[in-house]
Image 1 (tube, rainbow, N blue to C red):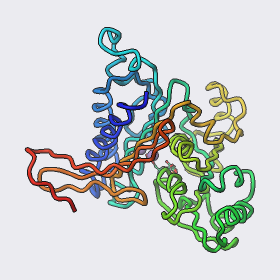
Image 2 (image 1 turned 30 degrees about the vertical axis):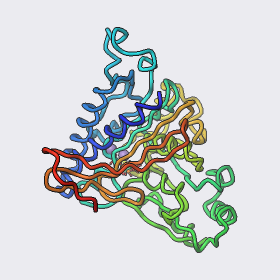
Image 3 (image 1 turned 45 degrees about the horizontal axis):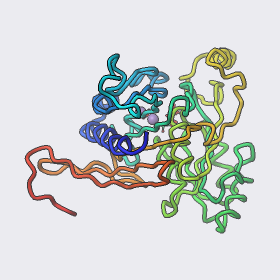
Length: 345
Ligand SMILES: O=C(COP(=O)(O)O)[C@@H](O)[C@H](O)[C@H](O)[C@H](O)COP(=O)(O)O
Ligand SMILES: [Mn+2]
Ligand SMILES: [Mn+2]
């Protein structure tokens, strides 16, 4: 699966990011999302692979999407075996979020990215479009912090694992009414809180890189984004745990149906019999080979955003592979017109 695919998916996220960034700051989140979806689909369909979308994101808020179950790649065609080699015919599952942080793009704010994760068939948890309680932390804290413990306890553990005072820790939390008590508790424990309006994938992955000044992600975000984050953290050896949240009272957004009971029944239909189960990164992204790729749309903690210049654009992407154990930052210059002199800085 690995080699050529690793290169091709860089272009998939780059094309989605470039398309979306043309709508940066225009106040139209659905268009910023739609163009990213179309660009991602178009580029994926040029790859010699046999892909299936398992996480398309978007059902909950009716955003444009790549559909769950949608087949992508040249080798999904009926006559594929005539021109695809056996490696390309291996079925792979793909989780995508072509525009993660649509509001951030629409309002010209930092932290949005085009992102996807890939594993062999069955290697990614097909999360329902519900919410997920998440705990992400750097590698030294992996398996020590625990989502079942209080924020206060986890901060103490984190401080021991990272060898720094609780006061020196920064925790990212989504700025939502559902997190009022959590925010209070983190502050009371002595740590500092970075509130974000959107974009918890970037926050989760940032935990795995020292120098980002992000030491944990706590709280409830979307479940599909949880699986994508888990894929990256699994490859990077960071800590990630997720627990589905199906009670509308807990999330307070009115976006996941009327009743907790109805949602439990929905989960059962999907084969999830224990709705309260806590999943770790290896369970959410269980594939033998996991690939992750992201490209900044607007500037972020990990990557630059798309920068246009006369006749082209420059992007920065991150590609992570469990197989080659690499995290590659890729700086690309895209030439829209005839190549001219390229500006290096
Ligand atoms: O910010 C986010 C929105 O993603 P997108 O729709 O692709 O632009 C994600 O990072 C969050 O994980 C999540 O979708 C958010 O927490 C949903 O919560 P809410 O806005 O309270 O419904
Ligand atoms: Mn998203
Ligand atoms: Mn999105």
